[in-house]
Image (cartoon, rainbow, N blue to C red; front, side, top):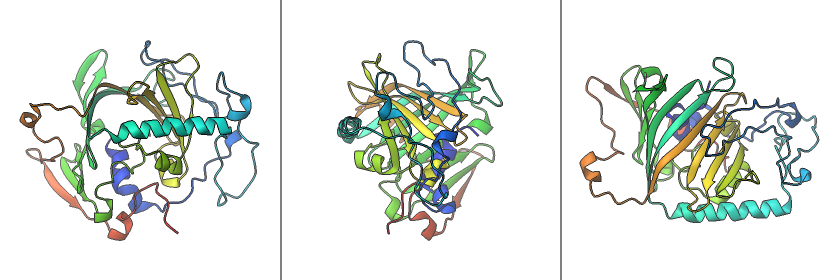
Length: 332
């Protein structure tokens, strides 16, 4: 199954994963056992593609000792999780600087919107190199806890077509509830957020790489490193592996491209837990703190309305299972 940052992932982001899994350290496979990733082609020629990389492969231009994996060890699964890589003190310091600058820029963003193109790669049921699906959509965010994600079109044989019901992704979070549009059943599903999740559900989800980056929280939940290629000058590339089992249930690793001038996301690549399927997002028409005088004519993007002929369904989730976010370790 291809990982998405759409309804399935966001539902896990807000409630579903928390209702079905217990947070625990990610027990991943032994580092040396990971098969090589398939080589891929750039999605956009003028924008360097996010490049798959095996865990033990050295990054060009960096000391091999800083990127090589520790020797494989045989240990019970219930012990400490395998660390995917080790950083030198210099690399650790550089990572901290990048994350702190990113946090400072992110903290100034009160509203955010962008368009995206989503490329889904499936080497089993699709081509080994080209994407199986290509979709277009939009994202909106308003601090601290309102968000909207919607896939609008799919691209087939050079034509822009309406999205098919089985691939439609559309969710809204108004800060108090998460609303998921189920196009197959024509149900608008509402998941009420408990009080301790309100005001932070968006930024504390499995993929907080677009909404409110916080350096300390990112390092607490992910093994991270800077992987910017030596020939790239105007971008910062980050790689993240989950530390916690519930994040690992959604993705194996994430690669993110930030533009240096404003620390805004340019592209995001996620690998499914199987390590083969991957999804690439390319972002365009980014707007931060945009004061659009005509916005009120378009309506509130964070207000979920039930389409004509649809049915609204309020989902009930036990409070004791929704009072923690997926991927966040329990307090001892």
